Structures are given as structure tokens and as C-alpha cells.
Length: 122
Image 1: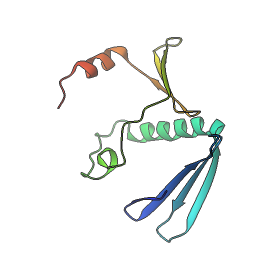
Image 2: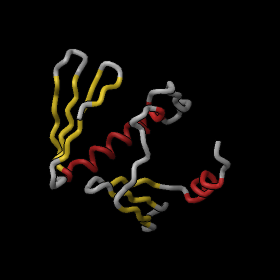
Image 3: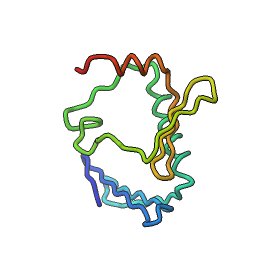
């Protein structure tokens, strides 16, 4: 499967047993690069990626996107994890989302979450 956004493309393949993830990226020059990840590596890589995004955007105004880009892109759909739980063991609760070996841990502020859930939809 190859997806195209702008002048770049990517494809994602997962082995039948879910142990290996292949990410292929085609550059503007037409050359394709492939990165193989083990499921054991996927959680820290996704965590590092998202942490860096937060670090670089903290203190900046919220980004806006064109009607067909970012969260507005047709392929940007809500994800449904295989399991969801909350860990109350630390300073603040942590939402733990398991996507079949890739586990995303998100610190949550219960008051902020409750406020967002009860806010009228716009």
C-alpha cells in the first residue's frame, strides 16, 4: 500500500505475526528507503517522536491546517486501540492504549479531560 501526500509517499506493512513493521518512504527524488522495526522497538520510537513534537511546539500557537492536510486529511481517522486502561500509580493518571504491541502512554489531567468531555461540540 502506498499513500501519497504532496510530493512524498509512504507505505506501511506489518508481518502476519505482528513482530516486524516495515516503513517505506519515497523521497522527492524518487528513491525509496525502508526501515524495519521490531514490535519491541515501536513503542519507544513512537514515544520519542511524539515527545519531540510536543517539545518543539510547546509555547507556540496551535497549528492550523488546510482542509485536506494534517488532522483534516482523509486518512486521518480515529484509532481504536485493542485495549485501554488507566494507571493510577504515579503523580497523575496515565492512559495506556495498546495497539497490538505498540503501547502509547499518555499522562492525563482528570479535570481537563472532564472539562473537554463536557464542553459543547463545535
